[in-house]
Length: 429
Image (cartoon, rainbow, N blue to C red):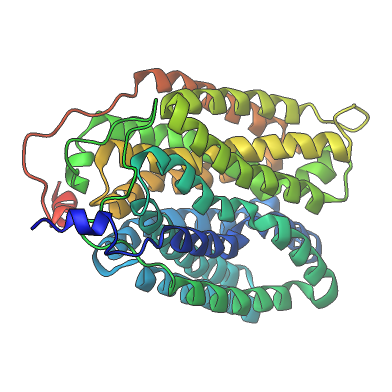
């Protein structure tokens, strides 16, 4: 007897919403990455780091986060999400505690950049796959959007909290307190990440109106990397993520230096609200309009917003807290859309069996984009003493990514069996 029928009906308790909310909670904790805008502002003021120096721990964290998603995704696929997420919580806590105890440039590079970045990668890789497996394909965008929205919404509470802690206990103790707290939260919630049993078919499985139909079979990682679509998606992701991360890392500084706004944490919180809401909205919208159409809208909107932000100079109508809060929220929404759209399109194109490692490979674009755009912004600011030029550069890349949405189509099936040991094959290529 096939096990799909009973599992689809009554023999398996559907834990979909438990797993979704646990993943949301984990990402709410891991989103501490986005408080770097507030922390780096304090560091440049109190420790006299340059903008380029303060960009390095954040940039390395983004890069480490993204590349650790590949082995973390593999671990999630093979050993389950609870182990991967627990490792993530331990690494994030250890990294932030190390940074707090050293208080040095290299301590922050290793602690925040490498260890915390690695921990975020393990936790993030484990949160989405088990959640989307409990739901039909027509809800992939919405569920992915809900889970990853936590990462974007984190700054709603974390930025004001970090701002208060910095004023009360200083930089080192702020990192120490946050490190201990998030270690406990992430490891605890990790125990609720339960994937469905093998062969489980979600009730109500049907294709959405415009979302891509499921692939004919699951792609192994090495097979995915032999398709042109992988490289197109990777480049588009790097542009969309890099532009958003560039603003997130320095938004408080941009508000103060360019528009004369000292309440930078308000802008960070507004961006966070948009970031979280944008993930849910874009994921749900893409289930109806299609992934590429939604990407096109987001890329073009973000390009326009980059130009608008560059014009928010002291004395202009844009240089007010309400106006910049709106712009920040919209930038956050368009950036956050990437984090719902790209896992969804990866599942659409390449299947669920190897989704953890496949999306991990796609997600390296997030880290490379964040790393390069953040450094580009630091260098341009140190050279010209304005953030406007980095906004212009980001707008150009976003327009290029928008054009590329017209060339992305589902890959044709690869006519060879999917390998179980695909990742080692990839390393030989």
